[in-house]
Image (cartoon, rainbow, N blue to C red; front, side, top):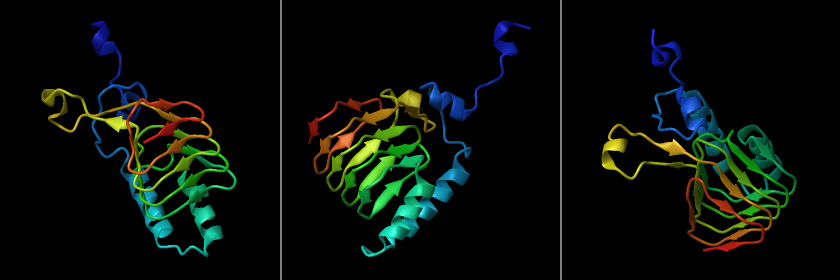
Length: 165
C-alpha cells in the first residue's frame, strides 16, 4: 500500500478548515436549516422585542457580546461560525457568507447592505466547475466602521479603528 492510500480522505469540514477546495455536499445542511430558521424568526421580530432578538442571537451565533444590536433583515448560512463582541451595531441587510469563521470585534459599526464572506471560489473556471470553493477567516478588529454597501472578502483582516467603504 502506498502512502497516499494509507491516509483517509478528508471530510469537507476538514478541507474547509485547511483552506482547501471543498464542495457543499450536504454535511452542512442541518446547520444551514437550523440557522436559516432562526434567521427567519429574527427577521420577523419587531423593534420592541429586544429580549427575543437577544435570545435568538445566543442560539444562532458562536458568541455574541453585550450591548449588541442587529437590525433586520439578516441573511447567513451557518451562524455558528460567527462571533460578535460587545457594543457592536449592525444596521439592516447584513449578509454573512459564513461557512468559516467571521469575527467581529468590540465597538464595530456596520452600515446597511454590507456583505462579509469567509468563502470564495477559485479564479480559474476549471477549478469551480462543480461548485468548488475555499474558506479563509475574516477578522474585523475593534472600533471599525464599515460603510454602506461594502463587501469584505474571504481572508481579510481589518485593523483596529479602520474605516472601510
